[in-house]
Image 1 (cartoon, one colour):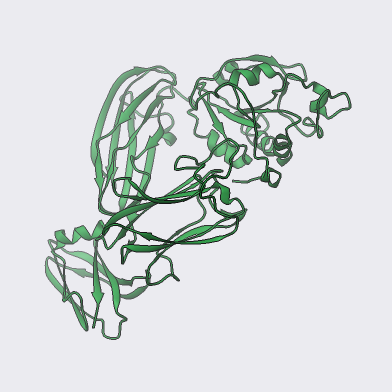
Image 2 (spheres, helix red, strand yellow):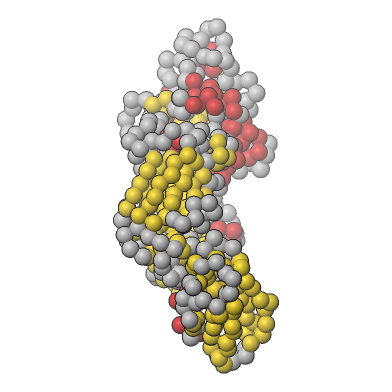
Length: 507
């Protein structure tokens, strides 16, 4: 996402107005005439299947002028308005009742203040209509709202054209006769790295996007393309009607892919399958070799936007840092941000030692208030986690993310995948090892087997080429003579399954 340097001290102008419409509220309808004399009816635009992007501004507002000069709205309109793919309509509203059209044109007859013309180079409709602004109860300027064809309204930050288009595509848009979609989906966990087990409870809104009433749908939950639940839904939803769906809880305890699919609609196919599938990939959480880990943070040009929390596997907050005015849910905010307790300096390096109460599973949660992460357009910010005995090479890191980055990890914890060793009767001995490590496993049928060993820095120190093994007990001897003392992980892939065990070299 793109910030605008003019916003360094004035991100938005905060107004003293009534409470803003909550996200997801139904948009108030309006019919209004633009400054060129053309009449527009909001609900008619939505009924045509178009998304409306509404900007409410004021000519005297410095951030409004800065955002206007970014050209984001005109770029969005050129790409997706009538001259583009014709999927949305941009509307601009001057929301101050005390300004006149001369202010919009930047003319001497302006009865307030205007830094220049809001009209030159603009092809989307412009309204001088404070009643529209009042009906949406905006509490800051500039305010950008996305109004979906189902009339639901969502407030977004004044961001780039690409970012606005990304937000607009979250709107459900009707098409065809038999059409259903998955919206407001969550797999049930913000984490995608597995330590122990992650209980998934996928949920979403089933939305009818077809002209025919939605009366039945088949919903499948799959793990690595194996069906683990099939739900037959029955009802009677009109176009844009919604039904909440909650699937069975599914404990994810190994790497893989979770897929939620609407496979049939009204006992047949779907006219638009593009919004029928949600996919989440899960990997093994990194494991640290002690109950103390080093956290290094390099802030960007906007350290005021950063906040983080360390949590245990029950969600309890064990430690935190950064601007407490942001807080754990303060990502992608649309209000003026002020420095609170814990705010870091800009472009600073912060080093902290995190003490974990016991071996086990933990998570680190980073929040960026503006929603553009810590890198890279406005400073080279990042966060990195290190083993306490090696603060040089990170085990886990992050920089480019949106509003949130949620990461799972373990400390002296056997990873989720390592539990699979029981299925293969995997044995490592002696452990700790000084010279030779014996690796023993058992399989029920023939399969291709691969093996690799990694050190505590994540570097591969040993591997052998894939070979086909057959049913029975297999043994390999690994010489560790000359290897530095420390923690290692052996990774054996048998067919499509992975087995990971930890061992140490001591002499």
